[in-house]
Image 1 (cartoon, helix red, strand yellow):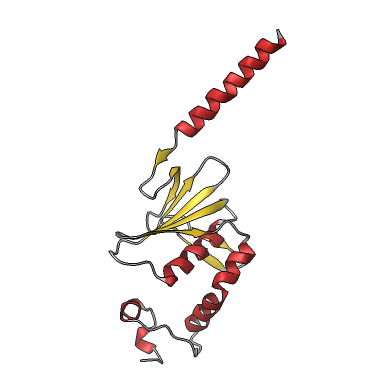
Image 2 (cartoon, one colour; image 1 turned 60 degrees about the vertical axis):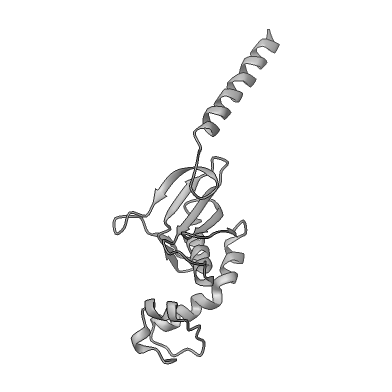
Length: 167
């Protein structure tokens, strides 16, 4: 009799597993997941990591149903992925980590897709972007900086382009 009960329990777990994983649909970003967050504009949740002073509104967060989540930054432009896109994505992962166990990050443009390795501690991730986070904070506070990465594309959309000391 105990073998029959064991068999029923195993079958029940098998069915539950397949029901759970069967609900994952392929995404346009190259993985299977269930959408749990999408940026809808002003009304969307702002994720904040107070420890690192970072906040973000990623474009999408997907549940991968294995205790992990994937963050997606979608860029509608038809062009390459810039280092600033990678750093924005990493900052988004850090901001969202207190809420979601994000272990996969994808950046997608109209012509390119890049997966970023974010299966690291938040301390390791912050070290990857620390220099530019501090540089950005200085610029936002009106301090002069001695570092600049000018490109025609970036300068067009820069928030402090009118007051740029490198022009």
